[in-house]
Length: 83
Length: 165
Image (cartoon, rainbow over the protein chains, first blue to last red):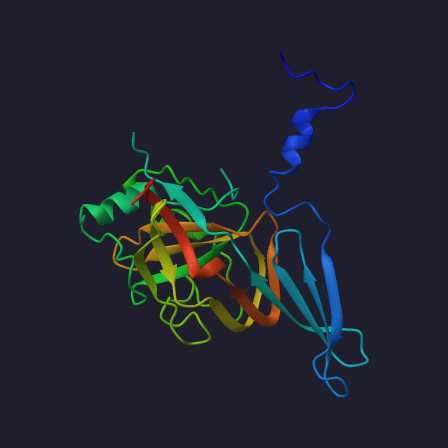
């Protein structure tokens, strides 16, 4: 007895959601100060790839003084084909 | 094709396995560098050995303040300290050959624009490419800041050599 497909439901599309390795979410930002009282402001934006862009501002100026980047690549996974 | 994935240059790995002249040593920091390129770069992981060289990609190199032309050596890429690669065997099911590394990249005081990926390559005469690292489809830039790469689990690559020990 074959499995019946529910009308209007694309099972292939549903299955494919589970194969998004890093998700398709929006970038997330976090702002703060390097020191609670005197530190310079910063803003960290982690994109959907998991990489961070960190902006360091001049206090009170609203200007970006420095920008760091932290890349987080996935490990290259390969295999030798053997039968 | 332009940057779309990470990969190992199979012809160069083969050259190392067969001890071809000037083939890279994958377990030393001394003679290997990491260079950045733009999205104009064509990775060509299927390149024949004679073409799998840094000289075929250096025209698309991203250079800038605080970042050495040709990229930092692995011996100095971690804030002046070494990030030393090593090949180890791990696991029982599957059995993996792991190309690991002791630390990430951290170079401060850089101003770089639009880095889409980077290459490990050997500085020994022929400058064979070892592996390309794709950053994910976005050009990353720094402004007087740190350019860093954090390797997942301190592993650059793994090769599954057997299903079971």
